[in-house]
Structures are given as structure tokens and as C-alpha cells.
Amino acid sequence: MKAIQVTGYGDVDMLQLVEIATPEPGENDVLIQVKACAINNTEIWIREGAYGTGSKSGWRPEGVHFPRTPGSDIAGTIVKAGKRVDTSMIGKDVVLFPFTSSGREGAEHISEDMSFIGSEYDGGYAEYVVWPAELCFNMPLPNYTESAVFSVSGMTAWHMIEQIQAHPDETVVVTGANGGVGSLNVQIASKVFGAKVIAIVGDLAVTDKLKKLGATHVLSYKSAHLAKDILEVNGGPVDSVLDVVGDALFPTSLQVLKKGGKFCISGSAGGRHTDLDFRTLYLKHLTFYGSVLGTIEEFKRMLQAISEGKIEPVIDKTFPLEQAPEAQVYFKKTGKLGKIVLLPGNDPIQTKEV
Image (cartoon, rainbow, N blue to C red):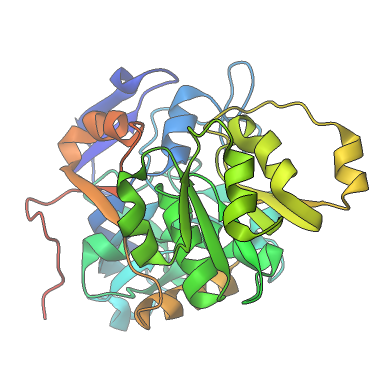
């Protein structure tokens, strides 16, 4: 099969198109023909070594073992089953819960042995992938490309919003609202949990699109007085901030939060280090959450909401598998709205056969 492998830490020249043997499923696994695989920040950061220090980086302390096939947001069709898997699963169109863990129910994502597809296991930048049958779930939409954009960013967004316990009478600020996690934060907070959403982006050209996704107000982080803008449109401080940016907007986030407000972060594209005056934290009675991924039950709730039409896929562009390096470069460009998806096949639509 064709696959894209990361051969070491570095730039996109570390991504190599190779021909390798199609993997065989273990006794509890299935073989999935990959129809679509969306790109996430995690694939960039693993390649760049951003998750760790020194020479090791990955979801586990020992770092990534190269070569590794990245890719965690996967939709496809089960084509082969291990000997302990019900053969009725063959032919099913599925999305993949993206990690294994021995953690108890509700704490799978914080288990010490959490291992991620595309980091500790070979992932979806390939024509086929092997994964445990119990972690494959029915595809929520009839379109492979659209179904592939939720697993990691969608579950991360869903978990963030469950952590802050958003309510209809609250206002939530969403930074990086044009990105994969951010655009889903907008939708989930507004359309599932009923909160008022203030979306923060760079280019206000996406205002109308974000309002269709559920944003009440759309503001630009390029404003010289962003905190004042937020307080003005909300009529006062906000209840929560869902952040994927990090340092660049951290002071603003703390400034606009009300007393007893909540700050939840799942990314640091705008800077991994910041200054914090602890007096702000305790005098405002703020609650901080670090957040990434989520639980199996949250994943199921998210898939149900997608199938009911409460959350819609937002896709900026698709690329053929062979153009993974170009796709990752494009992924890092600002101003896009939604997800970037790799397609191992030649069909740019990637809709399941009916």
C-alpha cells in the first residue's frame, strides 16, 4: 500500500511517500481501507518535536519511533477482521476513536498509558490502517470526507465545553475560531449547549460563515483594544474562554473573564510560554482547565449530535495523499476556515456507496 511516513523530527521534507506492506489485523483488530484522513496540529507538532524537549517528542515520554505513519482523524471501510472479531463488521463504514488506554471509564484520556494513533501507532496517512474493533464507531454522516473531520478536533472541542459546563445563559469566548477545534467550539457551545459565543479570528472576512456556525459576535485579534471590544459587545465580562492560541491572547482572556470565570486551553499556536500574575488567578477566583481529547462516552455523544445535524463539518480544502507535505504547509497558513483533509483515493468527494 501507499503511505506517508515521518522519518524524523524536522520540516516537511521528513514526510516521505513509500510503498509498504498492508498491515494485518490482530485477533481483536480490523483492517480499515482509509477513505479520508483530516490533518490536525498534533501531526505537525509531533514532526516538529514540539511536544517534548531535547530529542524526544510524542504523546508518550519515550518519544516517537520513526518511521511513523501519522494521521488520527480517519474515516473508512472495514475490509478484514481479526479472528476474534465478528465478521459482520466487514463492510461497515466507520470513524476511529483515536487512542488506546487502560484508564477507567471517564478517565481514558488521562491514563498514563494513553497511546495515540499516528504517534504510538501507525495512522491514517495511508491506504489502510489497523485498529481495535471496539474503537471503531459507525460513521455519523454518509460522506467519508465530512465524517473524517471530527474525531480529534471534535472530541477535543466537546470535552472542553463539557469541562466548562457551558449553559444557555452564559457567554463563551472562542479563540482561533476559524480553525478545526475553534470552529467546532463555536458550533458545540452555541448549537448543542446553547451558550452565546464571541468568536475571535484574524480576518473578519469569515464573519458571516462563523455566524452561520452559531457565533453571536465575531471580532479580530488584530484590534488594538480587543479586550474592550469583547466587554462592549457582551455588556460586561464573559463566563468562559475556550482557547487554542496560548500566549498571544492569554492576557486578554484573563482581562475579560468575570469573577469565577473559567479558562480552558487545548493548544498553543500563538506561544507556549506566558507570564501569569497569580494574584489575577486567585483574586478573580478563576478556574483553569488543560484539555485535549476526551472520553469514549463524550465521543459517542458527539457522534450522536453530528448524526442529528447539530454539528456540521467545516472543510477548507482537500489534498490527495501524495501531497501530504503541501497539505501540512497549507494547514499552517492563517485565514482558512475549517479542516484540511487527505484523500488516499482519486475521488475528491469520497461519498460512501449506497
